[in-house]
Amino acid sequence: MGGSKKGMKRLLAASALFMPVIINRLVFFTAGKRHPLIEAVKTYEWRLGKVAYTVRGAGKPLVLIHGAAPGSSSAVWMKNVNELAKKYKVYTIDLLGYGSSERVDTVYTAFTYASLINDFIKDIVGKGAAVAALGEGAAFTLTAYRAKPENFKKLILVCPKGIDDGFPVDEDKRMRTLCGLPIVGESFYLINTAKPAIKNMLVDMTANSEKTKILTDKFYSAAHHGGALNRMVYASYRSGFMNVDVKPYIEELRIPTLIMWGELAGDYENMEKIQSITRRAEYAVFEDAASLPNYENAEGFNETAVEFLK
Image 1 (cartoon, rainbow, N blue to C red):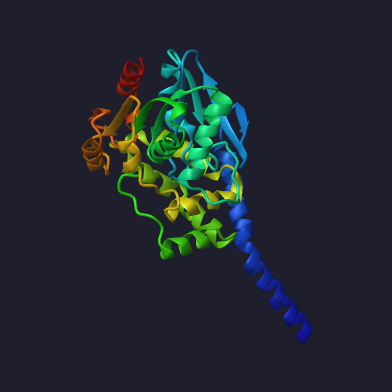
Image 2 (image 1 turned 90 degrees about the vertical axis):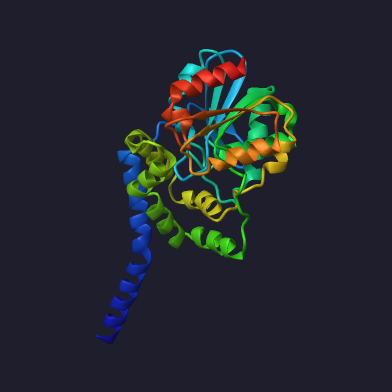
């Protein structure tokens, strides 16, 4: 009798241990079934993992790079690609750990992505390109430019990050470790990428919450593609390991650069800081738009981008 009780306790303990694992896997599986991600049609075999991308149009190359918020992907350019592809050969890339690209167990930093961007331009684009980049993607692009300026012809930076971001401290390093744990990290990630959490994040990034439904579905789908290793890229994002100070890089810009911002973006004041750093750039501000002016005012964005890229 005593042995049976001990056996039951062990079984209950094992069940308590593995139940979160089962639940987490079920959430990833269910999300993938209900919100399948339309995968990019091409794959770049990069040194750290497989990177998904698309190519449309013909002409001079233009590379589009998304941000790093949870669920980000090249889908953020959905209202821009077709129009821009009428004039240019447009490459959209899903950064490693995002969209249809592979999730890998590594520390994701601005320098990781700068290396990816430079290698992608060298190996896939094949020559210097114009690059349009959003949010954290703009900071990664500036980091890439500083390393290999020959890869870039023109830059369009949309609400660029890296102007006033802090760097990781000991507490942030502990947070990254916690977020990277198999069970705890997965659960934390799934809580922060649940549909309501994604929607709230996008409400903060847009001027009109009514425009977030399609984006919410796209971000939610991308956030759950690839399973449990999503926690690793989120761990680096959440703990500030992707942060970089791009102000010195902006000072060194020697190519035509257009900086775009939504007037209602929470960090709009950073545009004034950039203006105090360099006089070489051009600027465009969109009313009734926040951190995603390319999506909220696609027509204005596309017209402004095409005019600049001539």
